[in-house]
Length: 66
Image 1 (cartoon, one colour):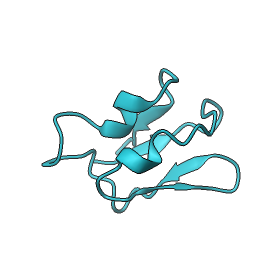
Image 2 (image 1 turned 90 degrees about the horizontal axis):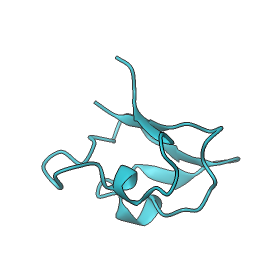
Image 3 (image 1 turned 45 degrees about the vertical axis):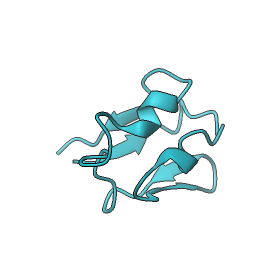
Image 4 (image 1 turned 90 degrees about the vertical axis):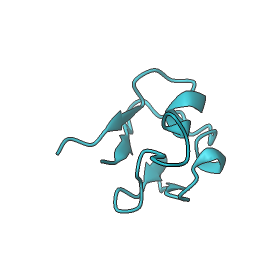
């Protein structure tokens, strides 16, 4: 699975980028974006997705629908 950032909710604080163990989060043209091909929801590296843990906005980072 992978995560994505809801553009309408993102405040571009950047808190998520440095905690991503797969370097999947980068600053986009408008807000931060998650590379869904490399995001693994921190599986094997943490108990929960680190970006969600540090994000100050509820429901800003969500699982990508399959």
